Length: 194
Image (cartoon, rainbow, N blue to C red; front, side, top):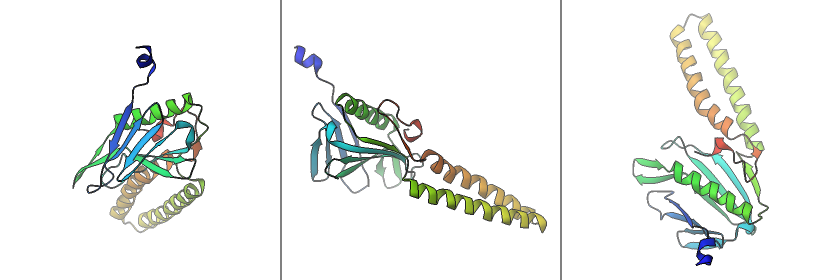
């Protein structure tokens, strides 16, 4: 009976990446991260996981979508998403289950003594391109706004202000959340979890 008391409870998570495809299924077991995607399946011991990258990846059907990219020591990769396709028009968030699974994965890896690279956000080069793009759009909108005000086109100026606010909210949120960073097993980046 004592052997059963020491055994950790298996944690499961599944999502559908597309409407047509099979569900992606994951389980945290005593042996490691067990996964099944279509016809492929494996169990990765926690110590063999080389890297985890957490990021915020919104899409048109779901603005609150998070992603964990997990890399094995042999360079094989899998992705875990926080949303699941339900119907043709519905992509459902699975915030609570995703957060619990990712948190538990990190806890089990730490307990196993894993030495994985823990990365948050997007790559530094892509982030720099995003910042440069944001700056160029800000300069362009500012120039158009000054011109609209100078020529008395107040409706156009109002439209530009509205567009700038919407753009800053959408793209600015993506850039802010996906700032490149490293983190530790016990301090996961909250901006990259639902």
